[in-house]
Image (cartoon, rainbow, N blue to C red; front, side):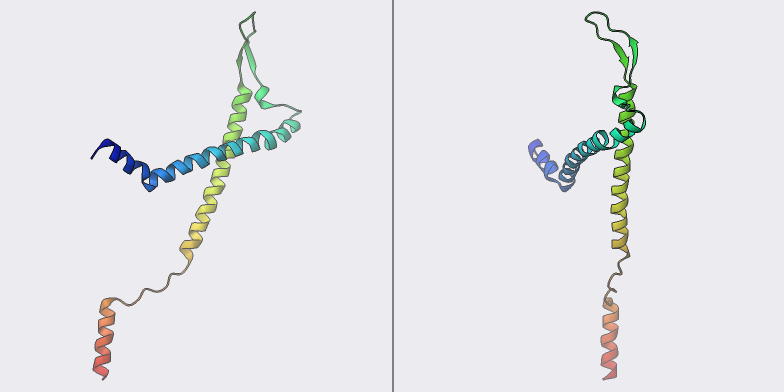
Length: 132
């Protein structure tokens, strides 16, 4: 089997396509959550903390000198990233929890009783013949 044929089979398998769709949707979801965090969640938190914007928090290790920019430790960006992560993790947790609850409801549905086995059908026919 040629390499192109092998690649074609791999690329069109359901798992590979599902994974690609998941990655694309995940990237879009990440942008949405980042926007919610940056534009909706962080402004009230900054207001409560006296107008502090976490992304601007930094510790200057070495002052700027001439054309050399200052060396800074941007811990505010790190704090913002951690908050983004916590919110994204919580959103994914809630999504998985919702999917799991739907699966549980689906599993709890009573299934139709299985039909009689071949042996039972045969025994029923024998019983009916004996009654005659």
